[in-house]
Length: 325
Image (cartoon, rainbow, N blue to C red; front, side, top):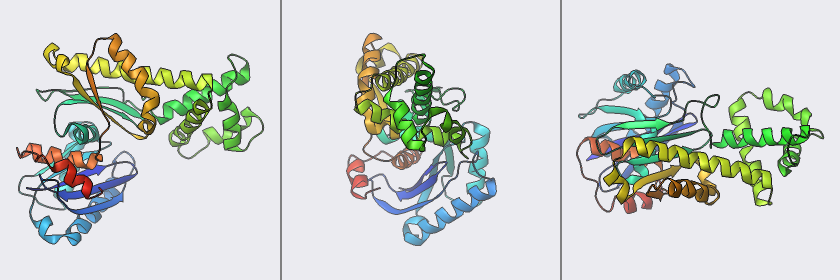
């Protein structure tokens, strides 16, 4: 069964044609499709380009597509999802229809291969999202960087800035983060970086980019950076435990809940994992941490096949990885 899986984000959008065996027939990457970031006209243009490329790569496979499943950022409620679904339906027709869903679902399925569980996403921002055996969903965090996206790149960068300025003011111990910030901005005094921080076109991305300085300071043995990583690791653990207790029953907890970790922060997963596991142990929660071997777009394919009640073949992951998606 051929499906189109789509991973739509605020920077780029990836689409593939694949089947239940993990065979990938066509791939395409276009620009952003997050409707909160660009206009609907621009979103439509990107999807049109995406479908055109996929069709051009393998017209035969494109003609066999039965279902489209798109996991997208910026479509957190049913109204927004329906709007995107109607937009895509104006560009192509498939026998089994088009589904648009939260991008957290496809990130989850890239690790659980369509099974229930929790996904902890920690990129620029963060969200903890879960689905149980009954299809019930819930979330912790992901409310935007001004309200609640702890443990993402922005949070690390912000915590680093706060620590550096507290040290500058004499309110806490000094930290190498302060020196690294001065080098990063090319300034001789910490107050002189304020304009660069606040007047950047995309303040969120700018502060998120400072997260790597916290990690660098940690690698150099900086105590303050260590506390920042510890606090964010604990936050992720607590968010996961909170969601598990809402969604899963005692018997499910005994067998272990799959928790998929996705996002750039987890390129240094080994730094946060011990603190997360400490929280799990403290709360008596049995967790199976999974670092996915496939990209989220694979989860979109799996979600589409699952909606069609098509079993995922055992060789799916191996075949998918062989295609270097």
